[in-house]
Image 1 (cartoon, rainbow, N blue to C red):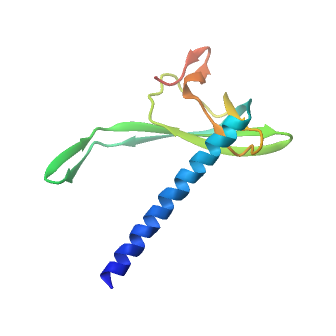
Image 2 (tube, rainbow, N blue to C red):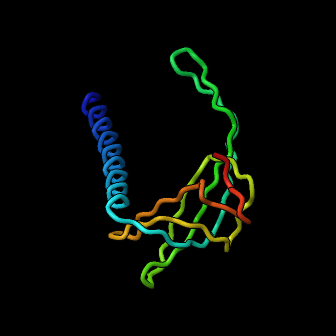
Length: 132
């Protein structure tokens, strides 16, 4: 009975990881097949601070230093249809982004819901917003 439960959990985990991998490959394929850029408007910028933590793995203590992540939600229009998406980054923010600012995103021509954001290209007053 225990073996069946463990086997079921393992199968479920493998299926979830496989689904994530297939989705990432599909999105990458669509973007490579044909994509274009469009200006997107920032709807929301959320800042999350994660405290330093420690985790014990095999009698060793691993330290996870504190870090800050940003989740940026944006909207863009393709052929008169408005889409919403977001991205998350751990890169440090040098200059603040605000609601209403615009950024350049890349979307797949065949499926406009598939987007990619290059944080190196996000600028405010001509200067980069995020660290490299």
